[in-house]
Length: 255
Ligand code: SAH
Image (spheres, rainbow, N blue to C red):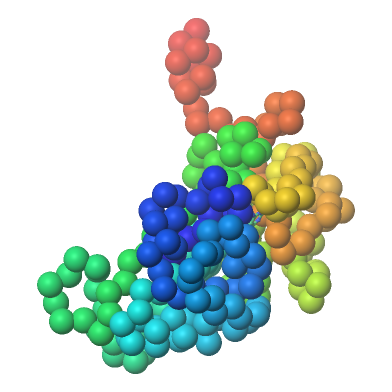
């Protein structure tokens, strides 16, 4: 299930219900910390970073044993989250899973509860940057070859998509963001507005609007999401706006 960006107000009521009903809560320690106030009676199984397979397997094993498990994932569980890995593991192990109200004979039932992903939490703080077609790309090359990431960034830049960059930088991955900026600059103006949101809806939240050419100099870490505007995006005060086209069609266009 999805935890949303951080603060409990941004956690869907359905997800809160699932947490309450759970006998076991499984998750990455940082996310468990975000929901301590909601953990009253549940057994907590917390694992460290890169313990993803172990964590999902632990959740599957508990569910097969008949326990109600909440496997928590930050943002939306279906966007670079744990939902996919759980289903992949079920597929590899030939487990029969289905919806909670299914009439089929199942190994266990499974429901993916959606949440607010960093891309909308961040976009809302920036104003309205995702009002037109956008592409989300993770810069983490731990599981995806760099050539594929590069190809996708280039295609998105060429297609004039607003580009959302997930996992932009970590201590070990420090050159990728600059390489991406250089690639996008082949198709987009240096003054293209760019928004950065660090720790959206968490303590220490920070919002920056800058330009594509100045992006490499900004403070960026693993809790930052970056939104690169398209050729029409503009900055208005502290906001980043991508026009949908209404004004051009109904006002300017009518004259
Ligand atoms: N499932 C999550 C994404 C997990 S990948 C979602 O739906 O948003 C982890 C990346 O998400 C981070 O490196 C960062 O780029 C972004 N992210 C997650 N939460 C964030 C937050 N509160 N503020 C800014 N970026 C965040």
